[in-house]
Image (cartoon, rainbow, N blue to C red; front, top):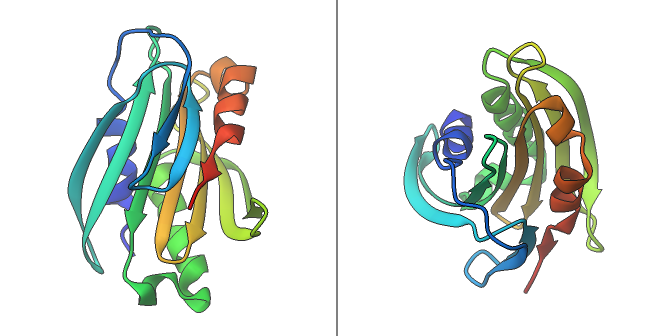
Length: 171
């Protein structure tokens, strides 16, 4: 499965945005809420993949110093998200995030009160100059992706952790 197209959405849509006050961003379409440090830029595009065209909706916020907060949701065909295919799905996403970088941490996880399947990954994309801390969560056939991208200090800092921990799936 080619998750590279989804990962590219993180990088492409994480452009610099002006600083604004912190706020909760809720997507009624995506059925999630997350606390960005300011108003995110939201975009939707179609990504081509081995399983067909996928509509990806991305919300991103970049700081003045180039660090980024990103969340997205994508609906997959039901067959791609069956229990027996989840490892392949999560591995493909990891490999897309990794690119030419190095995975420094990876852990399967259960997310939220419904114990949804997910995976946390940390990737060093440029010998310590740029890290990606990434979480993928699957609910039914919808994949949620949340990430922070930036310096080691930023990615391991309290603002990045608060953002990652603020993701809440809604009804």
